Length: 157
Length: 217
Image (cartoon, rainbow over all chains, first blue to last red; front, side, top):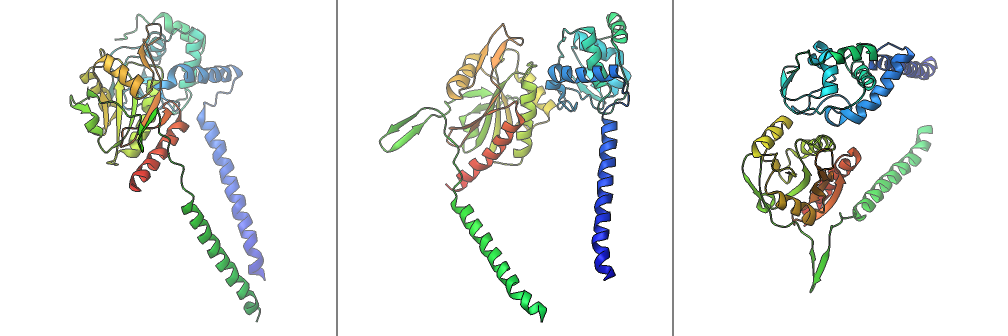
């Protein structure tokens, strides 16, 4: 008798355990997707930035930031982005001609100048720098505008 | 004793299930899959129907090899129109075509054909670099260039695809993002939006359907 009763009990326990694990996993994955910066300003930049990213960037760099072959460099994991935040802000504004090395691989497809405002650049930068493997936090318009004024003096060749 | 009473119904149940599976499989076989449509005008001459087919062509691919109708003799192929400097829909199309490539890479019956609509800029060398950067085999996926008139003409009159120059467009060209599925008889059997994942899923299914069609004669 006892063995008969203990079976459904064990099954229920197993289901509960599974549910618990799933809940924990979804929690963790939610947290890791974007930065833990939860200020309203960050959220606003991030949400706007995602829209702008889908409008201007994802055609080439893909929705998931994986890039396309050796034509368009990835953004999801990018040593170039990690090392050259200011250059990235400038090239969103001015576009990019010529070759660029990302993660040790050489890319050489022209990127057009986007003709968008400082705020929009800040929103895109906040989005791409807080998604996938990046957690830079908010890149606000004040910071981005300052970087943009110094673009010409940055070595962008 | 109890088990003896339970057994006969179980036996019936099993045989009933067997019958059900058998009946389902029979009806599955007899239900003929809807054949893919054949696009374009058709003429009836005597007892024969003459369908619209892709006209003869002669282009050059990324290896400087000549690509003609004979390249696609007894092959199913997927065609599209693009150009390498296009920043709007082409990268999305190429991402999707790459999915098609991945699924047919080892299939000797299926090839891919991408025409540049900007042949003045997209030289053989540039197409070669582009294909290499996508990491694709030139025997499987031909990127072709040729005379602009010939390319536009075949796009519009053979593939029913839009391709033309328009200086008012951001990139200087108007073209559709269509993928065209061509059968072994050079007939158009499907048209898909190459910028939409779901449409390309349908293309992948249709390629399989078309191959079965060939198997049955």
